[in-house]
Amino acid sequence: MKVLNSFGFPVLRFNFRGTGLSQGEHTNGLGEVEDVRAALDWLEREFTLPIIFAGFSFGAAVGLRAAYADPRVSTLIALGLPAVAVADRSNNDDRVYDFEFLRQCPKPKLFVSGSRDQFAPPGKLEALVNASADPKKLVRIEAGDHFFEGRLKEMRVAIEEWLRETLAVG
Image (cartoon, rainbow, N blue to C red; front, side, top):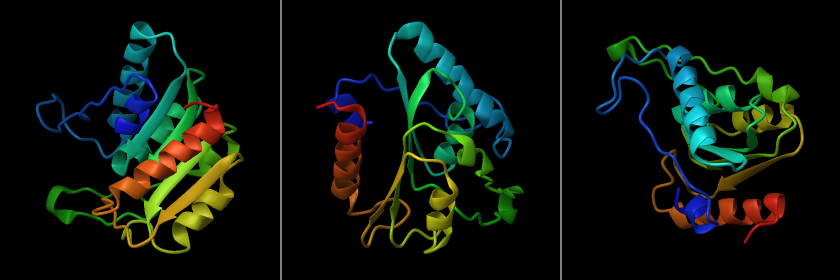
């Protein structure tokens, strides 16, 4: 959010259904794709700018699915994208992540992940990115975990540099 704001882009942050004070129930991704589409609709009404999608973890997985084919979205940024899912039996959450749609997505894509991200083990995220259509870039933040704890500066620099290269901004 701070990186995009620093370039003058407006940012919309929201909670998915059933999170925080939002209404509805979590649906393991199905309804959440509609949440992202509703957010894109709102952005289109409020601003007349190309949209840069950026999401973190589950939000990246769901948001990519909603944004990859949307003509209003110019670029995609996935932070901490889960390449593997861990079932959470405490809330019947059996997430399965399938990113086959990225094979046909010609939009510029940035993937940023910590080298110690338990949801993006070595080889898995690389295979996912390699299978995605160009243009794409993967940045692994050395010693970073899923939440980039202690490595937020490196994550920010990676996004800033990529935006400068990709959009010729800043």
